[in-house]
Image 1 (cartoon, rainbow, N blue to C red):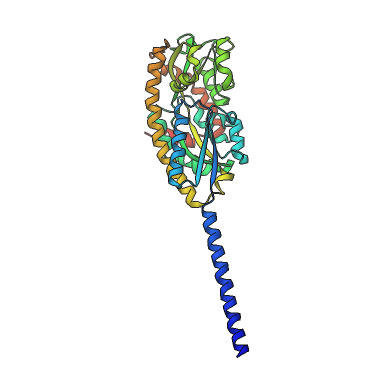
Image 2 (cartoon, rainbow, N blue to C red):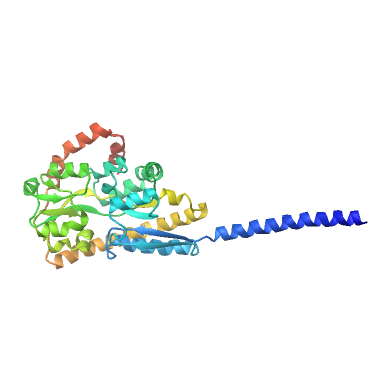
Length: 336
């Protein structure tokens, strides 16, 4: 009987241990499932710009969709560094999310140079169709990840025009004018071909550079011109429409790959909703920006000979195609 009882207790002991281990494993799984993530999201623009507003909305949706498991903290106005510093931080995993105009990313992702070609896009609608289509998806899903970046969505960043202290209606008006462009060799080639003197300048230095006549002007969207207050020192805004500014919200691939699949899925759902919200806000604010600029005394030049500028930039395309080929360019041009 003692031997039988010992065998019985031994069996119950094994059963108890199995039960305890199963309970511990289940509890650990539940704890892991509830792990909270804090994400720093870097943006260069001031809070009044549509992009930081879009990111605040995105953060709210992420918190809602993940039941508070993921919190996004938005840092606008370049608090986490300039764009190149943000991109390096994303690649290293020091920054979890960040916005970057792709013209600043060419040193990290050379394929994005195609988006800097002057007059690549017919208009805003064409640009968004390209980004929402196969070309945009190829960048988000194939190209960016090769460089340590996870693309979440393309932001509407408008079409860029020239602002200075004189009207620019045709290429001859640009002669001798130093116009700030981003640090992109394709943009430099484009502005030079248009007739100006392309002058890459750090973003925080533009206001003072125009004020002190170190440069004669710059180029950007109406939203940025208003939000940056550059209109205070550049009183003429000529609608030259030379560049479409392709801008992307990235996640660090190093960080992204540590997230559980269910959280990745919910963040992407929030990104889709935020993208549509952001495009609506951007368009509304663009219309307001024009009104505000005119009310502030800025002269809007609408009778620009855009076709004359387009003719001037043909050599830029020849140079680009010789170096990079025309396959993706043909795909963009095929989008109606």
